[in-house]
Image (cartoon, rainbow, N blue to C red; front, side, top):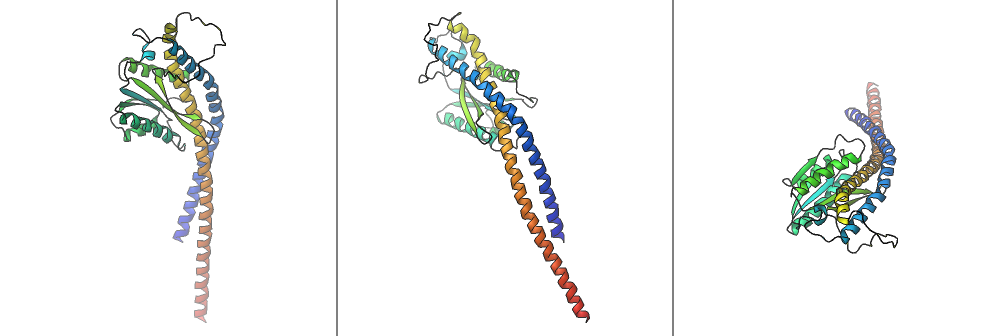
Length: 293
């Protein structure tokens, strides 16, 4: 009877868990649509601005008077890896994939003799401490953020730029998850400081027109470069918001189905145990009756 009681308690416990995972799936699904729309809407501007920055940078002769975000520090010894993750777990492999990609990049840089530091934006990124306990340059608090805004991205960007101008690092890389679908979130890493100039990329089309910049290219870059960093961080946060909800919805759907399978198995086990107990009691009753004859 004790085993029957334990099975009944376990079935009830799994049913309660199933209700929670089902509710979490529904909440994630409700949040996903808005987050997905925001992520998709933010892509064209971020991609275009990034392309414009690369195009302008390729037309400017780097000198001592050039903006530092363009010219860099003149070396690439110290690299800052910004890990953007979520504040909450229960989202499948969403956070671990970002951290794994950042860790892989850090190991490649260290193998090349570079110094690596980490800037953690999101509580779940703190797991990187297990592998690089003495290389955390900053842990940006994001627990207060309910809906991602540009102000949140600007706060991170301003902090990173201030550290760059203070000489704490030479190159910054940003890691996040690009939203593809509820099933697929692709870990992405890109250099955001200084501006990465891709010599193989197609130039930004100007429609064949002769373009004159007013003021000059360097002045425009000095104004737009900090904004570009903030925009790229903003895009990362938007992509993460959608990726987190998509991954959580999928994870909770799998958990709900697994709980259902477990409930079925435990119910069968319970019924068999109960049937065996009843059969044993009947046999004992019959045996006792036979002994009284």
